[in-house]
Image (cartoon, rainbow over all chains, first blue to last red; front, side, top):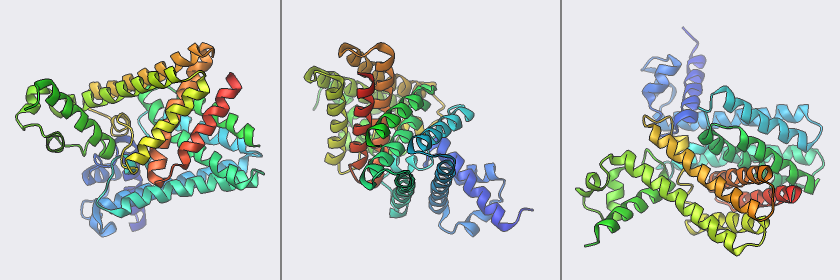
Length: 191
Length: 191
């Protein structure tokens, strides 16, 4: 029997995966239980707020994982352009690995709004803010001035989000390559 | 009493608006009836395939409207850069006009997949293809070579899609401006 914290994390991971595949509304507690192998009684024990709490934690976990990836790629990079390359390619590779079945873990919280719970809208806002802030932080460290770094980071996160949608619709990586080229061209103009 | 064709179109328009606001799964037939003012009995008369057919027609109608907009902006433009400016600004202005309550009418068909009906996935694929094809067609007319026009058009549609998500999450137009700057920088490199 897994430790309590393992079961909790497994349910969050399962919810995150399901939200990326089918969105927020189509992710049922029963699907999360099935995928995570957690016992039925454990949902309200670990998530007293039920599905809304689970969804919020899953989306927050997705954002944290993105931020961690951004930090790792920044540590491997010696320029903003390199960081952009790593990050966009990771999105493309992840999409290919899932055979175009997985999108963003935050976007469904936006597109399936408005929500009864301010908490749900707040989670996507905070998640995207953390991502843009983190990308901009590294751009500044690579020598780009603050305002330009902010705009470039905004374009990076929006570009990746858009490629998540259209590449999945097309079942083609061409939007990823196009977005990367556009972001690298933008980076050159503000270097 | 509206003509039959009016009632049908009103239901499609209502479904399109609802999908843009709350996505596919949260758009109930009852909401479409309420918003369009159509009588209950008319759903299966006009849409024998029920909600799936209505959703598919609403999303297709969204794509057609985008293509029409792209053609209108192209007619007003004398360069690819101008067309990009018109199109991105129209997305930004529409989002502001809706107080950040409306996103894309096709994206929910992607993010709320997989679908039992191949028809639903096919509709978003066809819709985005029509949009990218149309933008690329005008870029070629403005003198850009075919392969570059295709990549720039892919970046335009992905960029606009991404801004639809993150700008809505932030309730800020900054992603629109950042995406426009990135697309214009890309356009300059392939002019």
